[in-house]
Length: 294
Image (cartoon, rainbow, N blue to C red):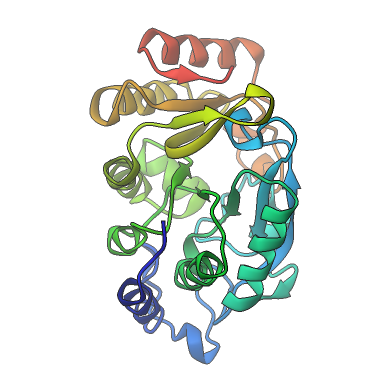
């Protein structure tokens, strides 16, 4: 898919005053002002290359997901496992022309997709980059690997840009979202986002890639990080996905939580997740009929 110029222009207008994400900081990003995400008027690329630690349908047989890590974030979770990048401005500024070039280079390496990691706060520039890359011959899917805290207006403009949405579904309780990410509206925005993403791309679709390994081509894939002591929220999130999005949804019920960054400031999450907690979460997802990777 290729974004159209009208949608790109509309997305850029959301950057001044900035209302790209639900924070709606109102700063003038193109002129160099910084909002909550800590990024000004051009994305900062922390790194780009094939990544083999993603979900199997994104990695394929050998190519690795063509991952572009973007600095900054609109959530800044206290337990962030990638805080050195997401909570700062690590890397080099990259305009849409430069990002398009990186995308084409990753495709030439044999990556089966382009995977934007933490893209929400720089969405207009990435839409522009995708259009340029498509014009230059890029044919592989675009993955939107985001935190799930999305503005519905911006998300609707992404239709035609994104082939595979891979949002987090982090919190169900507004009080938890406020305490751990200063985003009490996260649950509402996440639910809206999943509905809109599924409307745009549907359930995850795959086709045989090199060696017959299934490779994702389009659809929704949800990530949920199980938190210590958080099984009630996990069950609520999985119930919502199964009953209001689709029982055909693929959900990565992740068990790798560790108390990193500032997590130890919060006693309830100052310990690793137990195997029993993760097993219970996976069992609940499977009982609902959801597809899991565990």
